Each structure stands twice: as structure tokens, then as C-alpha cells.
Length: 361
Image (cartoon, rainbow, N blue to C red):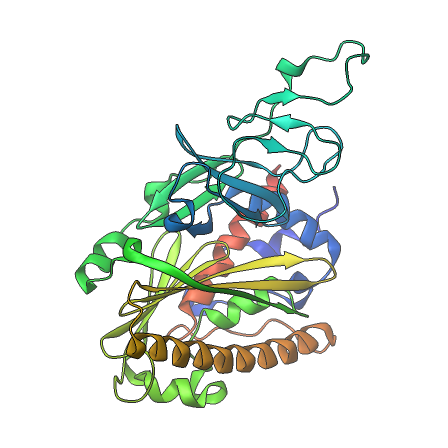
């Protein structure tokens, strides 16, 4: 495989002198294909909240990168598999649901047990040397954490390292994510590279210029970013009188490579950024709230959803403009701001590490 970059372009860079990734990392099928194997296959990704898999037989359909997957609550606990039949790649489930007893391919009816083993293959009795016992679905590695379910396709970093320090910080702030419940799911498809969207998410540098209403809620002077091995967290005090988030502190967690947890009092907005064909991306949003259905709580939720729509529209516009700049042929990699863009640097250093591994292999 010819790699779409030179070794010097993926060398590690100290924050104080770091440049952003070059423009050609944000386009092209060669980069996209490489990232599926070098990034998305090898790392933990957020799938859902544990409440969506509360009862035996509950299942959630999702994707890891571009890999279709299904997670199931079985009698033996959570299991996850490729949502791809071993016959001719048909889907085993097309949407999330309940009361699953077996997996049945929607294409030709092959069925699998909930441990991934093939149970029956329709009309295959005349196939020579066909061994049902030797066929099973590839299994995912699945972990629960603070009410959230993560999965990985193969050989991820130790999960304890991935989430190190997060539980303690949430507990200190009084956040109990496991007690929240899903209220709304939506997604946006954007004509920009997935890394472009994440670069934008990972800094508050643009907030005073792009998000006027959000800027009134956050204390930009005290907006700070902490970086750990596999995650970063942006945090800011909140002006409780100015908007839907209440008082306290806003926490914006990013967990490499594509998961985000936006946390305020009694509320979690979980995001996943998924690469799509033709240099597009999908941003999935799940809104979770404390299980309180009184009129005041419902009104606050609606204000939050409306405000989120405004912020996302602003982010979408700037990301599309940036993608046009990246594609224009004008841009060469610029310097990063060490104070405001250290989480961007953290993300891009993790990418460079994965790219270097691809070079070595």
C-alpha cells in the first residue's frame, strides 16, 4: 500500500512549536482508507448509554468508523459483533430494538446465536465441505463505564488507561451519568472531513468569533483545557442566569478518536463523528437527562435542544468554510496556539502516532 504522506509529515511535534496537519490529510480516499485500519479499528469508541441495553434481548445497531456493529444484552452480559453476515455481507439487524432471541440475516435468512455462532444456513445442505460449526461472527471488545458503553474492533489500548481520571472528576462535580436517560437522538451530515469537525470541537479559541450566544454562557477568560493520555477535557464556569445549562461548570470531554461527552448539571450530550464516503462526515447526537418529566424540566430540555441546534449550525458553517479553504490549494499548515489549541495538538499527535505505526507496518 502506498501511504498518502511522508514520514516527516507525521513526526511528533512539541506543543510550543507545533504546526497543524497539512491540508492533504483532510481529503482523498487513500487517507480515508488508511484511517479505517490505523485509527478506527484500533481504538475504543462510544456506542450508547447502558440504559439502552438495560434488559436481556435489548440491542443497539451502530458503526465503528465504517464498520457496522451490533451490541446485545445477553444472559451472559454485553456482547458485540460485526453486523455483517458471513455469507454475503448482509445486515443482521437494521435498527436498534428489544427482545432479540437470535440474529437473522435480512438478505438470505442465515441465523446466528447470541454468542455469534452460526445456528442455521438456509438451503445449504448440498454444499460440499460446509461446516456450520466453523462459522461465527467476529466479536467486539465491550466495556461499560459510568453508564456508557464503549466498543473496539481489535487490540485497543487498556481501557483503564483510556478513561483514567474521568470517573474521579465526574464524582467530584457530582455528575452521575449512569442515572441519565436518552431523550433525543439526531444526526447531521456535513460536507467536510471528520478531522476538520473535531479540530473545531477541540478548542474554545473560536467561541468569541463564531458562537456569540454560547460566549455569553461561558467564562472565556477562565476557559481551560486539560490533556491526558487518551482524552482531553475543556472546562469553563457557567453563567447560570444566561441560558439553559444552569450554573456550575461545563465539561467537554473528547475521547480519542471520535467520541465526545458534553456535560452540565443533570445533562449529557454525547457525540460521535463518523467518516462517510466522498470526504463527508456524520455527527451523531444523543441527549440524556435526569429522569424528571415535570413541566419545568421539559421546558429546560427544549431550551437546551434549541440552543444546541443554534450552536451546531454555527459550527457546521465554519467547518464547511474551513474545508473549502483546505481544498483550495492555498493553505499550508499553520502554527497552533499553545494555550488555546493544546487539545487540537493532542488529537493530531495521536493521529500522527497511528500514521507512524501504519508507516512502520
